[in-house]
Length: 216
Ligand SMILES: [Zn+2]
Image (cartoon, rainbow, N blue to C red):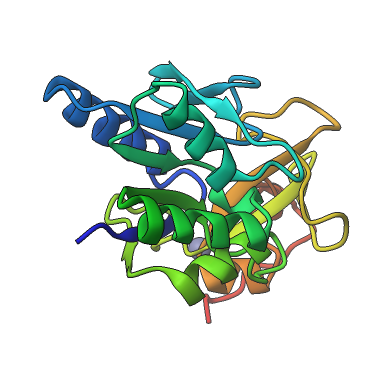
């Protein structure tokens, strides 16, 4: 039975690497996939991983009907044995419904990869719809780590290394940002709640004004 599978995790947990691995394994067996992405770090129409691999993809704009795209693709003689949707948290809920229809009406497996929650630890609308509709949810096992070494479960947005909790839900940035730019950092829940990033923890440790306290 074809399935809609949601591979979820934090930033930096290897989602895009796994998406590329699925693509590689299937194309090595002669299968052809259609890859959708949105706001990939490598630019429009690309699916890339932090490990440096990249492949061509179809950029999903606002209002693009993913089901209609596939019907058109197939009717023009294009092949599609499966579908990958990377950065699925950025898709609109109705686009997730269209992916479910691709599974049910076209009989294709759809593998969606996305971050579950945003920098305020709220569900992205696309991820929420995936949780509601997916046949299966896989939480990725390549776990990202907080600076303290604990499992990172939350995404923080940073400006100059300082965690911020206000702003638009979607601001494209990277974990390797330069000064004044929006960046992202994965943290454990404790340090997300305390708004303590690697940079602020380091600054606090170096400050002579801070009296040593026993860790609580
Ligand atoms: Zn931590």
